[in-house]
Amino acid sequence: MIAVLKRETTQEQKLHLLTWLKSMGLDVHVSEGEEITVLGLIGDTSRVDMELLSSLEIVETVKRVSEPFKQANRVFHPEDTVVQIGEAMIGGGHFAMIAGPCSVESEQQIIEVAQAVKAAGAHILRGGAFKPRTSPYAFQGLKDEGIRMLLEAKKATGLPIITEIMNVRSLDLFEDVDIIQVGARNMQNFDLLQELGKTDKPILLKRGLANTLQELLMSAEYIMSEGNENIILCERGIRTYEHYTRNTLDLSAVPVLHELTHLPVVVDPSHATGKASLVPSMTAAAVAAGADGIMVEVHNNPSRALCDGAQSLTPEQFASVSQQVQRIREVLA
Image 1 (cartoon, one colour):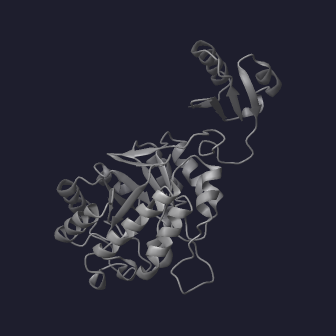
Image 2 (image 1 turned 135 degrees about the vertical axis):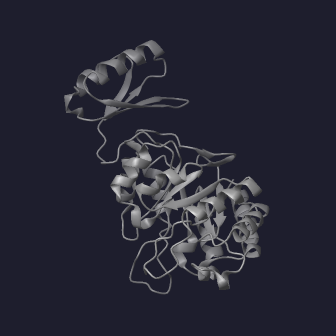
Image 3 (image 1 turned 120 degrees about the vertical axis):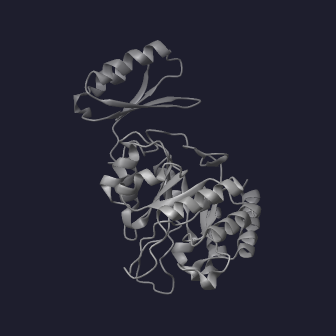
């Protein structure tokens, strides 16, 4: 249930109403915009007399929210959420380019790639320290040593870093990581999501291989229900019957999510297509569709990469993509 307050509502009146609503055992999410204030009522709202609430002098409208996701719902929070990571901002008209290798392979490699993508316009450095792989015999990442190397790359370039977490047990290792990524295979690891909700770190939440957009938003709700609202949604392709590409990139997810939620949405064309040759065009399409950012894999020697070399751009190719993104954004402005 939401209640929209009238513009002339005083702070004292608002606090009085909040006290009354909370006395009924409800949590109240307050979204204050330039024009209106929206109160999102969370909990057993059957106790609330809608007619009584609507009749209050300071209340403009009251309505029930039918979707199961509440705090992630744009109805609860009409204005875009902007997630800030250092000097980088995502959402609300701010665009971020996230780039780096699929996996951290050595300190020299990650620093070299970090310097290259920063020079080309990247705002955030990505790199996998823990790697979930289909085969138990494939390279699994350098784990805590990989995080250490990412932090060295951050020192060398000043770029904030993002890397993927696999389970709750390793959460302490992410203390100095700027953004924690939840991969597609962990999108519905609810124990992990709830623990991440108790942190104050931005969380990039990837859509699962076979999950609906509502399920993605419900996973975001798990994080938000524990108090962390710094969430970035990521469309990275879904599994269909098509085998030419690694996954099928659902670009319609971008405008649909922007209608449903206030959370920023980024697109990962690398994992979606699995082919470096397709990344530039799908990046351009994602920007045109209104994405708040892109996440692209870049490797200084893709043919010798330990993980996902086929979908990785070279630094030179990324620089070209970065210029293309800038041109498209200028046209859309």
